[in-house]
Amino acid sequence: MNKDIEIEFSEKAEIFKALAHPTRLFIIHAVKDKIMSVKGLTKLVGIDISTMSKHLDILKRHKIIEGKRNKNFIYYRLAIPCVLDFMSCAMKVISKMDFHYFGNGEHKMEAEKFLASENAVLLDVRAKEEVETVKIPLLHHCEYLEIPTNEVPSRIDEIPQDKLIGVFCSAGVRAVIIFTYLKSKGYENIKIIPRGYPPLMEAIMPGNLYKKLKK
Image (cartoon, rainbow, N blue to C red; front, side):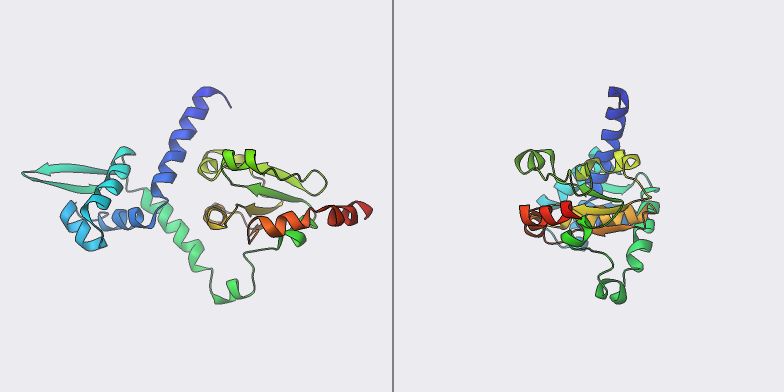
């Protein structure tokens, strides 16, 4: 990836980061059809004005919303309505995740079972600093792909759709976010690797590795 392309997609990734907060998504929904003041948004969302101002600043910085002053008040409206298309797509994915889906555990796969699967790719969405601190050697298990959460939208072409994808992070939150995002992009054969480090580390301990190499 050359520098110009990297800059372009880094900027796009920053927009996804700006959207990745429930309060900011609620603000976008609130101003999609009408203009609202800071005071009105604060009352609607139920947070203090200082916190609201921080959320608005992030959305303004990425030109997702825009404000217009009228006397002593600033009123906000949605600047890029197409963001609602993305939210709608994500909601369609979420609407399919009913009790049966989660009850059967269709969204996840334990580390040991995943590493025993054929044609699998572990997608590690931890931050670069985390990966540098705790490396996960999978040379004898499966293909390993390291893409930090905030870079997934700009590097999605690196993630194959014809393989089993296991999304991993240290605590599970980022794995859920990326799982839902990739589902919205048409990825079907994708699982969350649950419970963070312990099960994954157990699965690659010498005893389990020896059993795998003996097969």
